[in-house]
Length: 396
Image (cartoon, rainbow, N blue to C red):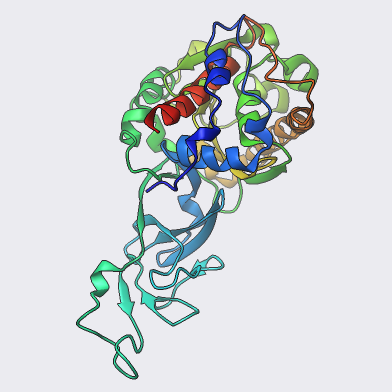
């Protein structure tokens, strides 16, 4: 269920140049970072046709809990029903289109529209239609309630992240994630994902950044900026210790020398299957379009990029540790040190991504250029985005 967009906006010849070999290519041009029309086009044709993350299941802490979400201008509603099933619906009444839920919270009975008091259960079913057939006539044979429930979206949960596919046409999320989960079995084994644990009242942060969501992805994909933007991290995980990662819907970087445990003195349980001779290996991978993932021997993280406007993004980070033992109070200091280390790293990136956003207003910049070696993952993401938009133009 994708909102209509104008494919005539798509500059085919410009995007075809993005697909050129890296030494001849330029990146996406300024309008893709600054123009509201392109922001909405990407919502419908890039994020909407893929699996986009809109929140975390743990943000619905109890059964019968709802949380409204604004997804690039679309009012959506994450809902955990009375049995614990998480679903996402369009957050509008089926009657006159009023936004239903304004704030997160537990629902004691039904969801009630503030306009004409129509009511919905926590599975999205329409249950009450006051006076629909006239005064005190709350049912009408001309109106079938079962045809007018809330409009559900295709929804899947992975690693606590709530994913939606607006178009309803993307391959199964499990299928799209398979290349990554297979890659990471070398570190996590076959059951490592099942060992991930979240702190009940910690291990989360959000950062508001004045940049387009794509710039956050681009910055995350490459290690090229490490010596100048992350001097502390570069002191032990140097630029020359990194390698590029690019496959399917993923791009990023890995390090052979991640060593926070020695630098910050953290001592946390590690994944049982993690190779002993690779304890300092870490991988940081973007799952297109808007998820950033990281794994280390003793923790993992997931970051959702929430695109708010062409020049504004909120980064939502969740940390995960290995097994129940890692949440014990004796590891409090170590978990705090891990969180603080990532707080510093992501804060150091803000000036760079906001600087790139400011530069996108300049007529002196029109997609830039790429290092034929150091920018390979960034160019890979640009090509992925360009192909999404070219496919849209071809469908028109």
